[in-house]
Image 1: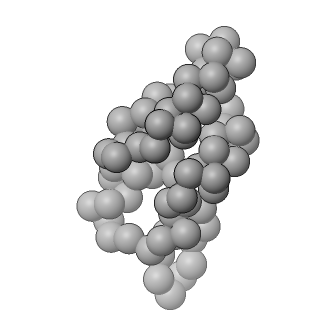
Image 2: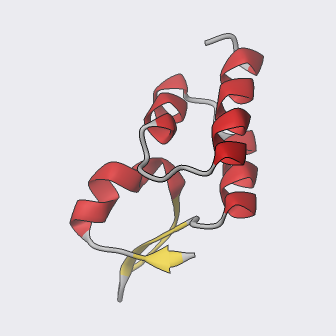
Image 3: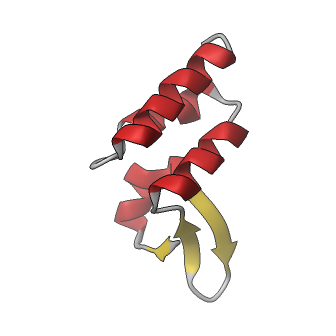
Amino acid sequence: MGIMSDDYDRIHWPFRARYYQEIGWTYYACASERIEAVRRMTDPQQLRAALEVPDLQKGVQRAVLKRLCEIGA
């Protein structure tokens, strides 16, 4: 998990992990964490936004597309 700025948050919000009062949001950054997060996502808008994250790993992209099919979006 990484800790990033508000600008980073606007782009990477689909992979938010946890909020800490002292430091702000943490994010899933490695492919295995992101794939696990995708498996828990139920919002098609969040999944589509995940596809727009810069430098998205190919395995994560495949997981997002598969999840969109699974939920019928």
